[in-house]
Length: 372
Image (cartoon, rainbow, N blue to C red; front, side, top):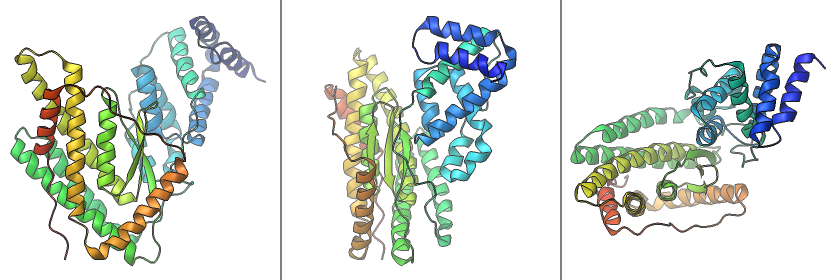
């Protein structure tokens, strides 16, 4: 065993398997005293990242958890470790590659050796203790039909419409843009279903994880569940790690990501304005107001999206959609054999509930006429 490996092993033995600050200081001191151990330390970090992938984690999941549990310097450090092996990981598929492209390119700030070693060990402690997650795929991307390529242009148009809806300060314009986006979403989802019915080899449902961040994560999880259900998907919330796993067919998964993000941005904007008006009137119950606002928003959006989706379904599509629903349910049951339900807490502010429902009405998305 080389001397640098010995240094790293000694530091790990001192710091990684206990939570005390004294142990952390001892390990950092060992590393700080031996600059020659730095390359070996970086290699071990990439090994921790690779182990996270084997446990079912993906880049966005790891970065999300590091951001929640540690500091920005740790986020930059783990992003650098992930980028170091990105060329090998890009072969995992387009969704994985997109997560790699979103990583921060900022390097960790330069500090003294002891401070840097402390940061590294804190990060490695977290990576070492990551539990196993439900794998999102079986090692390969779902088959894609060549005639589905135009769908990507459709999603680009939807993304652009939602971005405009989020940016405008005029409620009427936001509603019109959101309505057009939902019209395209409905057409996109139904076109995907029709292609499945016509294609000789059908895709299997896939899965992705979408961050559901604090605060008010319960209401946000309800909103995501409503969006998923309206688009023929299922969402399972992991409260401990701040994400929901959404299961569905690929085209529907992309729509869920787009629509949930847009609705959440619009909800936050409307909530901020309503809250400012409440404070101007002398009210200060911010937390209960926000929780109730977002809960009502999620509830009302779910009702409206469900009705909008129902108007798109014609009799000839029912067997296709039923088959897809069975496939999605089977995949959810296989991934999550045991799930529990939870009840929203803290919904006690009447004004917040009323204004959240009104905001959902303003964000209403019209359904387009049924296809001929």
